[in-house]
Amino acid sequence: MTPGARIEAAIGLLEAIGAERAPADDIVAEYFRRHRFAGVKDRAAISRHIYGVLRRRGQIDWWLEHCGAAPDARQRMLAELALFEEWTPGAIARACDGDRFRPRRLDEHEASVLEQLAGAKPQHRDMPPEARGNFPAWLKPHLENALGREVPREMAAMEGEAPLDLRVNTLTTTRVKALAALEEAGIEPVLAPLSPLGLRVFARVPLGNLDIFKRGDIEVQDEGSQVAALLADARPGMRVVDFCAGAGGKTLALAAAMQNRGHLVACDIAAKRLERATQRLRRAGASIVQRVPLASARDKWVKKHGASFDRVFVDAPCTGTGTWRRNPDAKWRLKPKDLEELAALQAEILDSAQRLVKPGGRLIYATCSLLKEEDEDQVAQFLATHGDFALVPVAAIWADTIGGDCPARGETLRLSPARHGTDGFFVAVMERTPSPQPSPQGEREGPASAGG
Image (tube, rainbow, N blue to C red; front, side, top):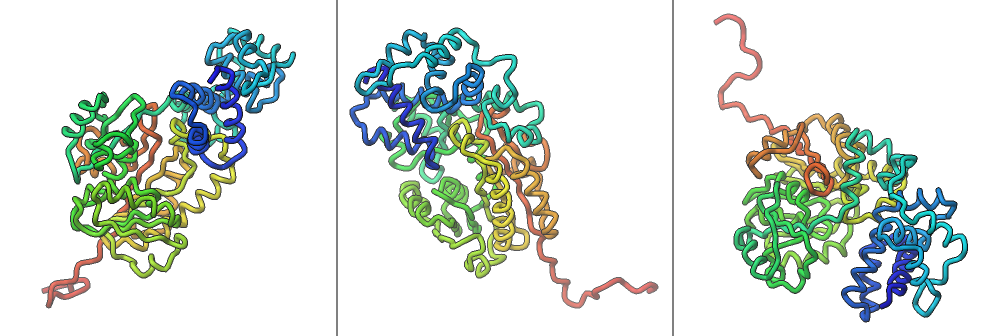
């Protein structure tokens, strides 16, 4: 493909991403499936164009408006080339010559805008924080409430591409053996700094072609997610529920922690997602998992199995603000009503899931959100209405399950890209008050009488 054809493809894909609710990754992957003539370099260039716009759209839109242009897929693509990919106005004009498969010619206004952008620094002193940080303006108070003065640093970290984090499947191998197998395959992993099961790769890897992946020795899982699963402290012989299991990533981690002994239930209201987890579970050798599709958070199954599980893990649906390195398009689809609706859904899910926790058992609440409304506030609200639960300090669990220095500053855990190199993740562990022990036979109950 010519440079112009790559740009035209990127513009078309940006239009599709803006018009649909599907994730950008899915839209781009489907395009490449239908256009198999696109080579490796073509795919890399098109992806670089697209994700450059999605990661830096705040700055791009500010510059376009500053220059009197209306932001759309084409204008954003042209500005990305000029501001961030260092294309000259002449090079852009040559690529946009209107020939077959290439963008139409630049009009006079577009040419003028590109001349203004030539040599400009991406960040301008007049940019507001939301443009500089590349996030929607309405999120500014919510991010500041959660991150304070760290907002600029965390948003800058979100602009980078996330590494590939892998979790070693201890049902089939060890981290030492997995590390050696990857190195033998020509890959250079490093040990993840927090998770004792994690390996990190800083290059694109065709995982599907690797024997170590095919036989289930490794799974793709962000280190923050690995840590969340470890903090569940699921042990062999326990009864455990992964209440919002989705495609099964944390289910697999929980099964490994339980050493395939006990009973592990994977629940979700999306039956098709649970079905897709089947192959992953089989490949990983996770034989203790029972899949239970739910009609809703209030499914009758929950009431039927009340107070019968040692651990109930709730990886709640959320805004995904902690995953913007991987899903930069998600930030631009997010609307204020989404946060309001998700917070209400999280409260409903927690209230339902807690019914499954037996006395002395634990409810683990996790999100991949940076926002207090979905994290600390949600936990505080739950504890205020469920007096038989109390927070278990994460540092205490960390010492038993992970070891080393715990990054938690309080009773809950908040991870973020700038501070920890993970996705944004929040974890809270709450324990239900154990049932009172029966009095020994013959022992008088109630206060002792005065005198002897």
